[in-house]
Amino acid sequence: MLNTGIREILLKVRDEARGSGIDARFLLHHENSHLMRIGNNSVSLNTSEELYRLDVVVREGTRQGSQTYLGMIDDIQVVRDVLKSAVDKARLAPPRDYEPLTDRVEENVDEEDQYDEALENLDPSFKEGAYGDIFARLGGKYNYSGSWSSGSTELYVITTAGDKEAYHKGTDQLFSVVLKHPGTGWELSGRQTGWRVSDFDADKTVTELERLLKVFEGADGRMVEPGTYTVIFGAAAVAEIVEMAVWTGLLGRGWEEKRGWTAGKNPGDRILGENVSLVDDPVNPDTFMFGFDYCGRRRRIFPLVGDGELINLMYDSATAAKYGKKPTGHDINSLSLVMDTGFGGEDPLKAVGTMGRVLFIPDLHYVNIPSESAGIFTGSSRFNAVLVEDGEMVSPIFSTRVTDSFVHILGGIVELSSKSESVNMSNTYGRRSPVAMSVPSYAVCAEVKITDSADSF
Image (cartoon, rainbow, N blue to C red):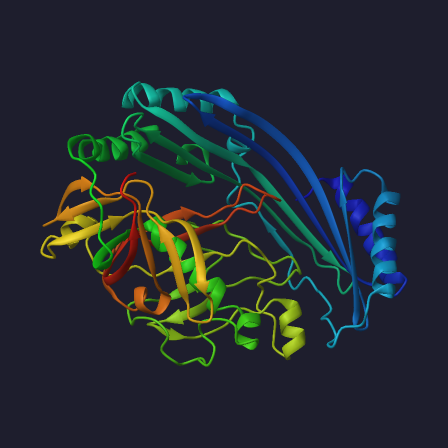
């Protein structure tokens, strides 16, 4: 549970607010973060920070005000002042055209299932040593870069609407390394995720990159002409596509405002392929499991798409209040998206062994949305992309751009891995808010539109 002194201060002010008839929510976010960056084969940044952030939201009829405080919570008067500022803002705020919902912690929650003290306090020398080991084993003729974020996150929510408390403490890490050839300019990357120190394995990264080095060192790069191709999307690429599809098509606000690609569709309608099922599953260990949202609502398994059919939309509190719907526990940045696996073997090359010429794009970069309403996305291969012929990797390919629709890509999967993989989708900017998805380790899609290709790496 939360530090006793901080908890007592927040509960005291909460009780005072309730006694004064104030409708308030208190959200404490505490992070202990470390980030190491690698550039030009050496450590270019090694930084740590510990931050406390208190967000207080007050509702007064159709008005709402909020105040944020950054700093240690060791003075009850500071918290009282933060509350007062939120009250003053609520009274001065313009009325909304709907009445915001009263936040309430639905159940007492105290979760630390994904907390590893060793990872929270990981010495930077461990990271430096791991990078050095990888560089030495892969060879000194390359230029190396990368980053390694690790740390812990605490969340604590209480409200004046009840006495229940919700608390979460967890650790997470995101490791990446990029190997660049100084002459030709091609780049290979490796990434790992997890919530324990033991989740990291240098051997895994070395093995993966050595396998790719044989291809990149053994053949010239090829330019892919625009057209349609069968494509193996790796787990990271699948995660990028699915996450973007969810944010632009399965949020209640976008659907209500008819902005997203599912506008005009209703629960029960087919929106994706029959072999695609998506769920927000905060008890899946391949994700970072947050059992409640910022408003205190309990998060449970929430089906989104089943066998290609739309099942549910996600409604945050404000959208639910505005459109008369029930909030679904999605006032949170850390979704636990899970895409069901299929029946394909674990080796993607064997899966395409009889398909002739195939592009293997493990990851997509610079992903964007040319048309949210049409569900069209675009992204480029940058690292590790290769040409496959008859189930064998034969050559690297130059940076290649995919521009296609969610409906076409996620409706045209011809082979889906039976193995799941955890993909870390965390943003290292802003407050620590770890996100991981569980997706099949690959998806083979037919007639993917390649709209552009560079003539070099």
